[in-house]
Image (cartoon, rainbow, N blue to C red; front, side):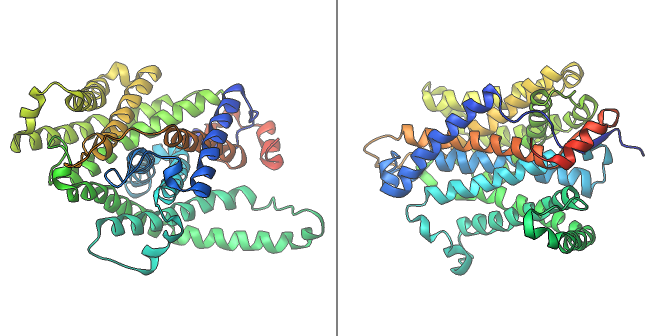
Length: 414
């Protein structure tokens, strides 16, 4: 079967007004991050002994891990299930997952009070700890994602190695090493793809286990023994919408036509996944009879309602509509609602629902916490834009791949 698309480097200029705005947000976040390391975590955050975690865990880690699920869901669909038509979205999804998990690891790093002990789980194993399982799986999966990205690197530089100055004598040696690496990866990549899917399922569910341990400190609307399953199902549900949103955004940013046929076909998987998640969510609520708490009209029940209605029920109805699935704006809005719902779910689980019984004050994120979180998001977008200009990641129609694109590949960033 002949493919209609081919991954190419993007030639559009890097700096735009929006990129400058994102750079300012990133620099602001990095400034607060520097304060956190120089003056301690208490100088930047509103965390305390009663509320030891906030949005850095709830959003940067909890939501970040879920939103990076597009990597393993598309890998399972394209490579394991051999749905070749989805090859065009696998590379962007892989890059998004790789950057997403990198920033998740950074989120954990900055949230730890004694950040210089982050290496401890590598040496001090505790098989009874849910957090240990999450940490080990995330560390291994980050490594797997970078290994999965290596074939894109070899494709970019094989036959184009041109080291500067006296280093050019090593051009042939480096090119030969890249070719050997590419051949080795071609024979073993299936191992890393399968490992990535398995590892993702493990730590996505184990994040829910963390909140089970919180016990009565969590509101009954979210505290449930099936929380690991709900976390895993919600990650499956948001994987494809995240890929759809990213693909449409990248296409608009670089002046490309969205791959409507592929995205429309991909969107057919979303409604069944959302339906399964909603069935377990509602079923669990009725089995435990926690629906009685919905009679209480307060901020907690309002946030629960927004999470369920806006983030699950409305996009579920939208993805069931053929008209929405064939519309780029419809796909974008429906996908954004699913993403919003999962982000709200993680925020609710880690922040809204968590309330120590003897707390003397409430938690609200500081300007520093918000700035670091927004800075991470902005920095991730900026790095994504840089990568797609250096490496062949985003697919373009074959008819648009001409002499200009070939020169762009050789020239790199301009």
